[in-house]
Length: 170
Image 1 (tube, one colour):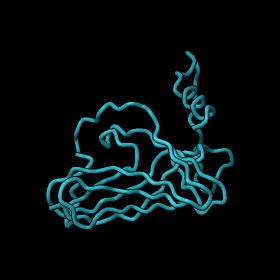
Image 2 (image 1 turned 120 degrees about the vertical axis):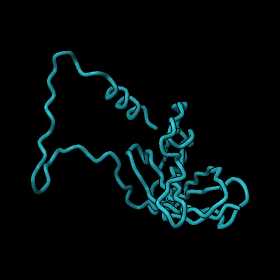
Image 3 (image 1 turned 180 degrees about the vertical axis):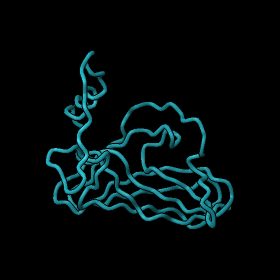
């Protein structure tokens, strides 16, 4: 992560000066407006994600998220620890019980943890991969695990989704 991004994050965290009046930007009714702010997350063109896990497992579920870059330059990825993801950095996941819409993880209504604010960084070489892994402790059952990378890719805030995987925990 470059010092430029860290400096910008620190600047944005500062309170606005006393007495300053900020007016929200006008929202266009149709078309686009030049100079509008980028979305909170953008997709990184040329990068795809693949989430893998064993189809059947006894015990913790190992997950691997592979970010595959087709770009001709290296891509540096960085992810912060997520308070709602048990302090894991990447991949970000949501687990649903098969046959229902019940969210098993992250646990709905659970108090988030307070995690350290370090970043996990990896670099994918030109036309190469960056791999992130983690494990999940799930009770016995059938699950669909949705996964994605949410963080920074070459200093841009990005989200790279992967196809969900089905896992049976015995």
